[in-house]
Structure formats: C-alpha cells, structure tokens
Length: 460
Image (cartoon, rainbow, N blue to C red):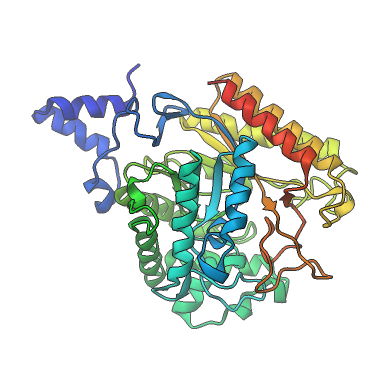
C-alpha cells in the first residue's frame, strides 16, 4: 500500500483541482507556520537527512537504526575559550564513534535560574537574551559530529529544574521566585511538577519559548556557515526533556492543554525545519499520568514524527536505588514489559519509537568511577537484547540512547555533587556525579553498547 507521504508527493507532481484537495489533506491540522512549509524531499533522496517511512527510519534510502548516548552537556564542551573544553569534546566524540555510538541526544537550550541545582551558565541569560558563547558551542559540536557522520537529537526545553526549564518560564511571567517550588529545597516534587505544568497555559511563556526555538533552529553555524535547518547532522528537534502534564496526583486536568501544546509546538517546529524530524522527548506512559492511552493520545498528531520513551527502574522503585543487584531480576521483568508495551503502542500508531533514556546505578549505589557495574552491565544486556529482538521482528523500535555519557568528567567534591565550574559528567547538577554516568573508563559497559550498535547496524 502506498504511504501517505508518497501519495502527497505524487499529488504535487501532477497538480490539478482534485489533487489540490489531496494536498490540503496532506497538510493536516498544523498551525500556520507548519502549513506554509514545504515538505521534505522524497525518502529515497541521498541528502543525509533521516526520514520516517511507516514505523521505521530511513537514511539515504536505507533503514536507519542506532545505539546512541545522551550527551546533554556536549554543547557546553563545544563553547570556545575557558567556557568549554573543545579538546575533551573532540577526544570523546572520537571514542564514541570508534565504539559505534553515533547518535547523541543533547541539550540545546537552558535558562538562567535561581534553582539550587540549576546548571550555570545558561544559554538564555534572561528572557530573550542569549549567551553567544554557548550557542557557538552548539555550532562546534554539530560541526565535529558532521565530520564523524554522527546524528544529533536536540531538545529545546526541560520539564525539570536542572537546566532552568519550564518552571523558570513560569517564574518570569508570574513574578513568583523559583525557590518557592524548588524540589531540592522543599522536597515537594508533586508541587514542583504542577508548577512546571503551568507553563503550557501562559501565553507570554509560550511566546518566549517559541522565540527561543526560532533562535536555535534558524541559526547559521559560525564554524561551517550551514543553516541548522539545512544540516542533516540534526536528526530531530525535541520539544523538551521529559515534558509531563503535571504530577500523577493532580495533573489530569492539565492534559487537554498539554496535548494541544504538543500538537501546536511540534507543528511550529515542523514549519521552521521541514527537512528534520520532530519528537517530544517524552518518558512514555510513566510521564503521561502513568497511562498508555494518554501517551498515545498526546502523540496522535501528524506533527510528531516518532515516539520516545524512557526507562528508569531504580528511580521508579522497580529496583533498589542503593543496591540495584538486590532486585535486578524482578526489576528487569518490569522493564521488559515497559519496553514491549511501548513498542506495541508505536506499532499501533504506525510510527517509529526510540528508547531515548535508560540507565541504572553502579553496584551498591556507589558513585566512584572505579566502582563496579555488574548489575548495570546485566541490565544493559537485557535492554539491548529486547530492543534487538523487537527490531529483528520488524517492529517499530528504531534505536536507543543510554543515559548518560560521562566521558572524562570527574568530580573532586566529597558529596559527589556538581558545583559551578566543575567538569561536566552525564549526571546533571541535581544528581550525584557518577550516579548513572558511563565514564570513559567503564570498559565492560562500553563494550556492551558497542556490540549492540554493531548488531543494530547489521540488521540494515
């Protein structure tokens, strides 16, 4: 059966009144910016952009599957001068590429905030003001990734506090200090989540957010002169890191505005960057009021090209946070079920899906890079085996990104917590530096990831 995209391309080629109606249907319920944008080139064109065909990714006419990493601070390392560490970035990109890890999920926008554990500096220094040095960090990262034939997934906001995120937007337009809702100070995570979810319904916050989106997406790279929208290194733009309707207890009334926000914002991004894909950055059902059906409903829009989900068995109490080996077997069973449910949902929706975050603590809950990773290695193997099996079966699972690449980052702090000016690791500032990081010295885990990357590519 001919795909909807193929029909649309056929309609454009032949024109005519009746076919114009077909083209109108192809446009779908996007907003004005998205409706005005040209569609991407035919799927078989060899231009380096990742596209979607049914439940699979295609790159230059061939299936595209990957084993990737979260590298949230990559653009920070790419900043020039003392702000960044370009030598470290180049070395770590080489190490990742050598291991077959060539898809990186990266933070592209952070907001200056008063959160106790917020990252500093931030890309947006004040409403509508941007740190050009950090934006040049994205330029450098993308240019170096292009040299290594790597793909980037860039997220443009954050539901959580560690990069400022949605709660900082709320603070800017309500005048309420973020300290009143800082979970690292109050311990009230439900209250924090409800406060972050106010973001979706504040028009001024949405206007500033769209300006931030436009600032990044329409940027011209100062290293190579390419417009971001013309750079096939960018596989996808994500609305945010783990956007939620609110807390599990009180977030249900927010769901309609959240669903509309997904549709409208994704449409806006599609209008700006029609050659690139759009995804939400969602955790899946766990981040959508624990509901498979609400997750499905939130993504049931033509403006979202593919689905994402995350997997955190120790954070979700499926495993012991302080000793992951203690309930490794039972927690892994729950993790396999979570994977299967989401792949089945993607099959049903007819879109690819990516496991874009997963991780587990080091043995005995240690943070030291010298400590063991026996339980983590077993967990990674189980995850990768299930992803590979579902991919082999022709299901919608297209790839994964482990959380997170810590590389050469190390902390000298006795409490293991990050402070301004410290080297970055895969663990953001609100978490112990070493909690989930895969360091450059974690040879056994890196070998598991590398083997999976080769197995996924072999399916092509």
